[in-house]
Image (cartoon, rainbow, N blue to C red):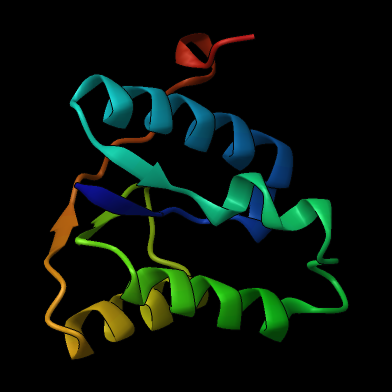
Length: 107
């Protein structure tokens, strides 16, 4: 199953990227394919100047997934949009509320 990973990003880029990496490993261990644009979009899109473009790509990816899983301690504005798109497409939204502590994040 392709699982879109919805997790906050912009408020703590380095920390959130490490958390999403850890979450993706756990999703893979459960036998699923994680779709985590937080890990690759920054390679070619500047979040500070191209935020809307990044969100449009994220929303397109949501529509390609079998489920959207929410992680983190809060829901950001971008995550709200991702959740809305998932719901509009009939894609299940699951609130996992898992936020690994720094000690759980692999080096």
